[in-house]
Image 1 (cartoon, protein in one colour):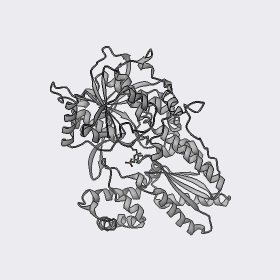
Image 2 (tube, rainbow, N blue to C red):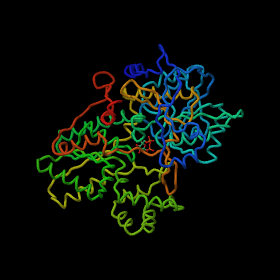
Image 3 (tube, rainbow, N blue to C red):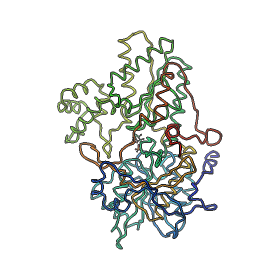
Image 4 (cartoon, rainbow, N blue to C red):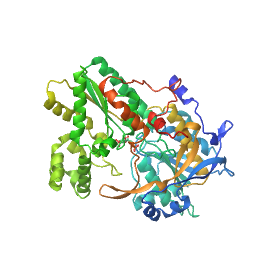
Length: 546
Ligand code: FBP
């Protein structure tokens, strides 16, 4: 309890624009000069006419104090998607900015809770209790996508019943797509007097796949999660060099993007790290990947090293071109397969095998059943393959073992498989995430007080004190094919293989493969010299003038 109390009281920096004596002040927002749009802008403008016209794709920054601070506003806040460390501090920052003359309501159970009208006031006592704590357990979360006319009608009903002026959605790319859709849907004419409901998004996800250069260097939660994984991978590296007998294959969370894996590799320096985006760019097959792994095992064995650690991003198989093509083909088949969910596993496999073309059917048949079954499992409500459930690390072990038998059956290859994911999503936030989220909450609150809607809060100039930013959500939207049909989405930001962080990794990995040059960074710290280290990939990729 003592440590928890100390953590609650941990002092956090507030960006200069919000500072006002002991408290915070609301600010007005002006255009920065940055204007956002995507290749699908024309179609997005047709689908999101009101927010497109109102926000004109312009990025805003907060600066001068707000001339007239409104009072009496009623604001709802909800968590959406997977948890990420720091979420509670967004609520703390929001509450602080809204002050006692506006009301903050917490939505229990994510977007589904909003549809069901599960709203309760956030009290000062709640805020004191959750400050700097990990998890989303204060309110809970879920992955419901709000997309049907019936769901929109329910949200309107809840907004009217609770006299809501604004909704804040704390979520990742899909949840901020939800926020963009709701901002348009609730733009006007929700209340009897013609007023709408403002909608503001807050960029959360441990995956790090919601980022936009200097405008949004990283989503919150990434720093804490990667430090937790780097600590665990470092411990395993130390164990493998102590016991000298195991190859550890570690799958890391992060969905499609390999940001988490790259960051953990930079921190812990294991023998082998696979980066999905590079595999896609080089068009490597599964056999190519296995050959690379097997050759590293062989060359280390030649030096008497029979241990090592391999990191694999959970999204890997979606990036191997041949498997990606198979998954696309399966998505089309599954989108039109009525009654599929009711079949047993064997019948499901037989059904799709009969619908695929010869090349896809052959690849599908070559995969172990435990992979086949996961490729056929339900997609989430946003149409994503449930990557965390696919045992890619086991697949790599099995295929590497088979290849090693062909090369030299006497090479020792004792293995352990791990999946690090859920253990990183609810840790107590690092100093970086704790301060970042508090300021994101303040920014979301300030945007509401300034009357804005259809924006995602962000903090720019992270390395120089911080500036509150507002990113127009409509300017981020693309049209993508998901689950057999077209969908409006915020595109996931993938690892840029030409960026400095990746280049640094590429320049070092051959050395890390051949000898044990690993680092074991240990637990994250709240005080002391390493406490304020930002993610290495963010630091390496930042523009020099930031
Ligand atoms: P989001 O932040 O996009 O919601 O994803 C976080 C995440 O942890 C992913 O890394 C992972 O693939 C997924 O959630 C797991 O989903 P679930 O919690 O439904 O098992």
